[in-house]
Image (tube, rainbow, N blue to C red; front, side):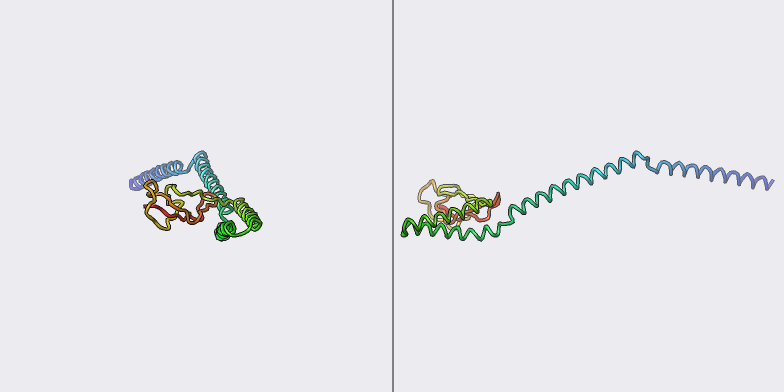
Length: 178
């Protein structure tokens, strides 16, 4: 009888082990992703990687264009002093010099200015009476406005401002009225 009890116990334990193994196997089967799920995960990873690469290409292309646009900015800024000297020389020669000297200096000035313009340099158009804009103008000083309509506006332009592309490389220096 004891042997029979032990046998029944062993059989029950074996049945429990088989049931547990089957349950574990069923759990393992549900944990293993299907090929469709694996494909969906890999497809999602691929799409994200592709989008990231496209953004990288656009960003580097934009940075490269900005580099070429503004690469000669330092050279342009250093040439602005020469351009200002030419303008002052033209004014003085027009006052005191002869016509032939004036024409020669004007030819050189125009050629120099056109070469800088070809490279993207633009003159800011600022006149007396325009509204003061801190994005484009630098106020050197304020004076009492000669008339009521010039209060808070530009009275005189001391130095011309320039842009390179869309970027201001030298602000126009102005006198404002208060």
